[in-house]
Amino acid sequence: MFDIFKDIFSTGFLLRHALDATLVLGATAPVAGCFLLLRRATFLGVALPQVSAAGMACGMVAVAHTGMQGHGAPAVAEHGGGAAGLAGAALAVAAALAVLAWLERRSGTGAADARHGALYALAGATMTLVLVADPCTEHGFTSLLSGDLVSVGRGEFAMSAGVLVPAAVALLLFRREFLGAGADGAFMAAAGWRVGRWNALLLALVGALVCSAMHLAGPLVCLGAMLLPALSARALAWSMGAFFLLAPLLGVVGAFAGFVVAYWQDFPAGVTIVAMHGVVLAAAGVVSLLRRRSTTATAR
Image (tube, rainbow, N blue to C red; front, side, top):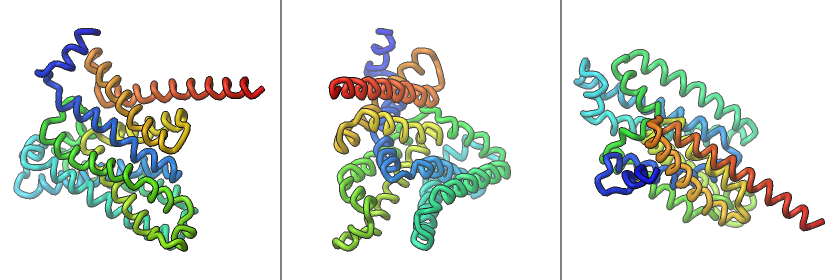
């Protein structure tokens, strides 16, 4: 095991960009998960990666059919398929969030889960149909869906980190405004707050973070990195500030542990990282349970 850490922390480590991407994703994605939990919009966190995947598929297919027919998936990636996929994901998520916001204004939040479920189903169907129509792109897109972080290159890491880090920082800087706008919108609007603008900014930042995380690691890893550390932090946090501090910290711990195990045992990196986030969540649940029992015993 010592040799594993020696390799990982060496200056010539071949998977340096993959490790950096893992740590950045672990530190930033849970911030979006915190807001999804607090807003009780967890199913939106499930739907958005699927929407992002559908948009990415459309973008890559569009590139494949603009002068590169017959070149296959490697040519698509080499000639900007990655950037086109990210642009397609961003457009798809922006359109989906705009439609959801419009529907929420018209019919309220009562049917939000149903709308998110419908969005998930429609996005999945769209992605499948688009890829079936272009088998060459489907072959390259499958590796993106698997969340193969080991193959992340310098350019892909820089492009994704350039969105993930600013989006997470903005979410943390304005967390009081976002939470205030979501807690009691009518009261805050009466107090002079521009609730609609704060909610729109929150959705835009979460959407941007989801798109970049999805482009970097695929929908499964994106979802796991968002929600599992946030759930762990909720089990351990003693205040709202601690919640937003613990979520990224536990995200980094789970992501790094998963990367080490994957490198050690030659496992797929993405699913191993999600599994380690699950181990951290189980440990957090045990600590929370022991703490509650200790508090109860002291009170008696």
